[in-house]
Image (cartoon, rainbow, N blue to C red; front, top):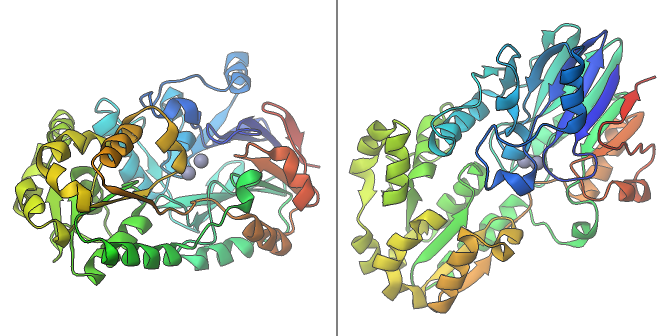
Length: 421
Ligand SMILES: [Zn+2]
Ligand SMILES: [Zn+2]
């Protein structure tokens, strides 16, 4: 067995790993680099140079691409693969990527997805793959155990132990002595010293924040971060407020089946705010029927403005113009809860425009977020249990720092193969 990180050995985002055995290959993720994922549509951007070379050599016998989760930095370039290469992912991740493709990707999903079942091994000869469900800041994320030639490689994808689903981490810990562990290290480096509260601690802090705000609470978070959406729903209901969804979040919740604890638009205490830019996206994507479905659960913006203290509103940058029109008078008494990666606040773009406008109106701005990535202490726990023969850093800006914390570290460069002995 041979392992190559085509991209991600020394950067966060754009992850792509090739596992090769007996002349056949599997790709684990094929993401867009993070600096491009905000601006480019799915399927655009360059393949990693070493992977491009493999294609050009004509010897690449690709049995499939496995996508760990529905973040662009893990699937954004899958649309660049030939259509006869099977693309596999989790069943809900497929839904999320199809909807994202329909709404923001010009109406097309990058691929028809085949889906696997969590923990059920499947064969893509000569490989045997077991997908391990993990907790991350998007629903339906996986680590992959790939076996071939009597060797085993475990690829962590993006994951964490401080989410609500601690049991998933225990199952990952039960994997014993793989020959290789490719472990994400987003928080290795300066960010390892930050405090990363658990999702439950965050839920309590959100409830407190909602309780002490005299007026409207606006919240910006990732729609696909459904654990966070559940935290917000619970916090809103706990203080008697109506939870108002944006259209995209409403659509995701509507389309994800088999999760009875996920809020639905028809539940008590939930309404949907319509905004023109998102309605236009829905119509362009052929999702006009969904608009009609949500119409009875719609809330009029003047109603939010009249009773701001009764609402928690999910807000996206595209809704800012509507908010300016209807909610301006409510903003001095309002709180904007920013629950995304803090870096976006300092980048030119919609989030920064929201921050500037809301701040100028006297709206209180509160950052409440926790990382979707594994903390250093939890990495140590995992490694004590799993005991891989070789640990290869990935999805990290600081691969050289792994050796200061862990043993048996092998730092690869992008494109550098490692032959598993
Ligand atoms: Zn990632
Ligand atoms: Zn991710």
